Structure formats: C-alpha cells, structure tokens
Image 1: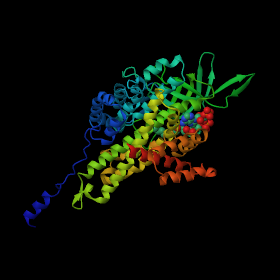
Image 2: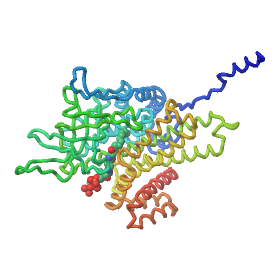
Image 3: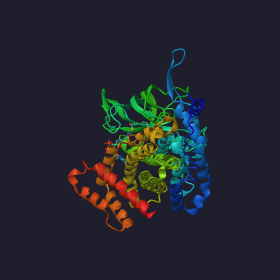
Image 4: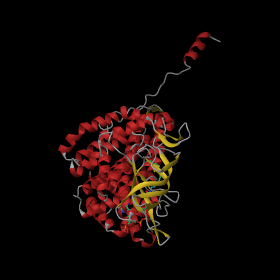
Length: 513
Ligand code: MFK
C-alpha cells in the first residue's frame, strides 16, 4: 500500500471534531424570566437590596455549588449498622459535600428569609428566587429544606413554648446552629392514605413515646422530625386506641449521638435523589412532644404539606429552567445537516414550546409563593386565602406533570448526550420523576382540589379572578365549566379539572405579566 495514504489514514484515527459543550453562564443574569418577574413583583427598593445576592448565587450555581452537588451525587450515603465490636450504631454516613450543601443553605438563609420577613410579604418571593437558583445545583438538598420550612411553619402556627428553641434552630443562618427537620408520614400501610398508620403513642407518665414502623423517612441525618401516631391508653384494663392520628415532634438523635430509641433498618434504593438518604425505620419508644390538638394530626401536618408542596412546585420549575437552558445553549452550538440546531424550524419549535411551558409553570408556582408571603404576614384577603388553598395543590400537581414531560423533551433535544450520566442531564430526568410522587401523587392532589371545591367557595373566587384578568370567555374556561357542571363525574374528572385550572392560571398569568 501507498505509504502516504496509510499515513493519512492513521492521522484520521482520532478525528478532529469535538463538540463544544453547553455553557450556562450566570443563572440569574442569564434568566430573563426570573429577572423580569422580580422586576414586576418586588418593590424597586427590595430588588435593589437583594439583586447582588442573586447575582452571586447565580454564579455559584454554575461554579462552586454545582461542583459540591456533583461530589454529593458521586458519594452516595450508606447505612453502617454495626461498629467493629458488634454494637448496633445505625450510622448514616453522608459525604462532606452533602453536609456542605446544608451549611450553604443555612448561610444563604434559604429557610430563614421566609421567617425573618425583612421585606414583609415580599420575603417569600426573595426566598424562593434563591431556592430556584439553588435547587438544580443542590443534589436536591431542597427536600430537607422544604420539610424544615414546613416544620418551622407548624411551630409558628400550633406549637407551644416547648418548641420555640427549635423554631430558632430551623430558621438560623449559622451552619453550626442550623437544624433540619424531616416529615415522617408514610408507613407500609400507605403514603397517600395515612390514617391506617400503625405507629402508636403512649404516655409513660413523663413523656410521650412512639412505637412503630416508618417507611419513607427523608432527612434522616437531620436533627428532628414531625410525625403522626395514634394515641393509645389503658382504661379499666382495656387498651383503647384513638380513632384518628395525632401530630408529634421528635428529636432523631439522643445525647450519645445515636438514633433516639429507634432502629434504622435500611436506606431506600431510589430511582433518583440518590444523594439524599431516605430510610426505613422502627420507632422503639422514641420520646416525642404532642403538637396541637389530639386526633387532629392530619389537619395539622397539612400546614407542613402545603409548604412542602410549594417547594415541590418551585423545585420542578427550577429543574425545567435548567434543562431548557442546557438544551437551548446546546442548540446554538450543535450543527446537524449543515446548520445549527436552533436554525432548524422543527427543533426551534420544540424549544419554544418548552419555554412557553416553563413560563406558565413558573408563574403558577410563584403565584403560590406570592400568596404564601401575604398569608405569613397577615396581609392576605379572604379571597386570596382561598386562592392560595386551591392553587397550592394545583401548582404542585401541574408543574410536576408538565415538568417531567418537558424535561424528557429537553433530554431528547440533546440527542445521545442527553442520555449520559456524565453530562448531568440524564440525572435530572430521574430526579424529576419524584416531583409527581413526593408530597402527594397527581391523583391525591386532584382529590385535594375537589376537597377545596366542596368545602369552600375557592373555585368561584378563582373563576372570577381569572375572568377579571382575561376579560373574555376562553375555550379552556368553557371546557372547565362544562366539567364542573357534571356533578356526578367530578371525581372521575378530578385530574382533568385540576390540570385545566393549572393550565388556565399559568397562561393567564403569563399574558398579564
Ligand atoms: C425529594 C426526595 C423524596 C424522597 C423520596 C420520597 C418518595 C415518596 C415517599 C412518600 O410516601 S411521599 C407521600 C407523602 N404523603 C402525602 O403527601 C400525603 C398524601 N395524602 C394526602 O394529602 C391526603 O389528602 C391526606 C392524608 C391529607 C388525607 O387524609 P384524610 O385522613 O383522608 O384527611 P381528611 O379527613 O380528608 O382531612 C383531614 C383534615 O385535614 C380536613 O379538615 P377538617 O377536619 O377541618 O374538615 C381537611 O380539610 C384537612 N386537609 C387535608 N389536606 C389539607 C387539609 N387542610 C389544608 N391543606 C391541605 N392540603
């Protein structure tokens, strides 16, 4: 063979082309949606005060924070049940990076801002703008933060002096003092229907003690948890059980640093959120404090659920935005069939539709945040309170459902690169599946929407509010009204009704913003 030809062939072995990777840039400065929303919804002087913080966090989100989150993802938690001498220790080992994500959350005031209320009813908007920047670069540390925020809200709403110290800890900016709370509801008997739970509470003369199995306990390395149990008493030699569950607060670790009268049996092997330790455990006489009214546990823990559902909605939107940002940037760098992907009308259309979906979900989720801020500061009107109650489950279920589909589309828009672990994109899809499960499935939340419609005038208030903003009858509204009129099929249609409320709210908010 001709030597020159062979030499040429050999020089081609490694090829020449290397794809330039997507480059995100500052996540605040490069996000016109977030920026324009804040410009319209925060008073000028508030935005001026907080903008530097947002710019800094926007930079961290693609630098230091992202690197730490990657490290946490690559060093998953493990349960070490016994020490070298055979003693049961039930130690949940997490990476330094996971611990660092907690410290950063405290320093950023990710829970604290919501309770310091420096900016009154606007504090929640600022808090969630930060959470939105933090979440996709946090290995989902937002999950423990959501529960901690919910626990702070429960203490603020119901709890007596006994837990004041914990309220201070949950809202502390000093990493050394910052405590994290779990929310332990799910048992083997059910995650949606919690009333059949088997955990019981007895009073030993000094304190309440809990006994029973908990099946999904996230934030197991946190310091405290809110949980449900059925109070049991002995009367006249008979064991009498309360009909309904009560709400309890417990400390997870005792003074010796070991789980407080509990056994951690296993860490869950989850599809996503793998840096987050979620455990199965047995409570074996764990001391606990009864919160609020006995047998009103579900009602009282719903205060926490509504906060965590708001986190869920904003976290989904944050994931959607990150997936879109990567796919959009990639489309400007990747060529196929002679031009950049962005210049192909069909590819551009997919990206434009994804952006529209993101905008609708963003506005829906942040409307809930806005109303929650007013509720916290008692500046909310009665009508807005009903809107908040209705839109919280709607925002959670709508964003989770649309978000997963949209993120899947963004993975596809990246082609093979989207399917890879080391581009970090495949992981986003796995994580995003949790948003429609955690804190209530789409069906359970749709039934919550029906609960609100049946118990209050929220749907009438919502319809009036929407019609005031649109000013004209809309096809989607007409379709919804038809479904609402089919009284006998409300449960059958609950998901369609809830999704329509979400879609219409998002669309209308985008159009008036
Ligand atoms: C991110 C990392 C994640 C890690 C992996 C996690 C994987 C997933 C693990 C899980 O298991 S997540 C599942 C978590 N579970 C939930 O989110 C609970 C879902 N179920 C519900 O939300 C049910 O609707 C509920 C348990 C609340 C229903 O229970 P009941 O006993 O049938 O309640 P009922 O009797 O309808 O309501 C009791 C009271 O609470 C009522 O008030 P009144 O007594 O005054 O009438 C309700 O109006 C009130 N209520 C219920 N939901 C409410 C609420 N109030 C305000 N807001 C709400 N959301």
